[in-house]
Image (cartoon, rainbow, N blue to C red; front, top):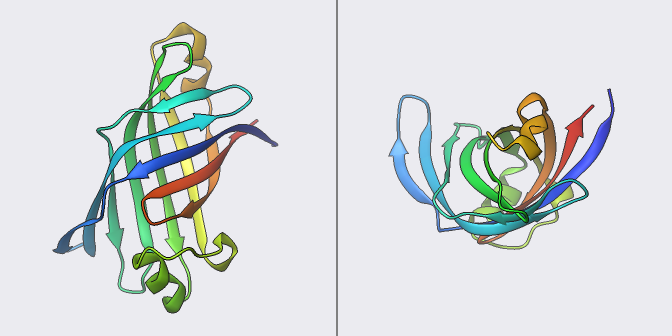
Length: 149
């Protein structure tokens, strides 16, 4: 198994909507407002309208669950889902929550990515898994995605 660079994603976000505690943990929704992605085999824009439906667990770990739409540079539409986890020391997580810049080496933020499309040019993505290393900024998430080959 190898990792092949796919693209760097820059996903723009609205402020966090806190829905409060549920039976699963503290439910939060973070709406996606746009963005870009660029890489050796995939580039284009992130369309507004998706979201991250997060759960913050008692220990501060966040379960990530995103769904949104991409438009490639040549007009194909792709559906992407990511699932993952973000955790770190409480002080680091507090700084992230306040929107401060934090070195991504100070916390763990990893994603698993799946794609779906009917466009023949990108149908190979339907049969491909990707992993990513991510970083959170005040109003965006940036992640480098790699194909598992």
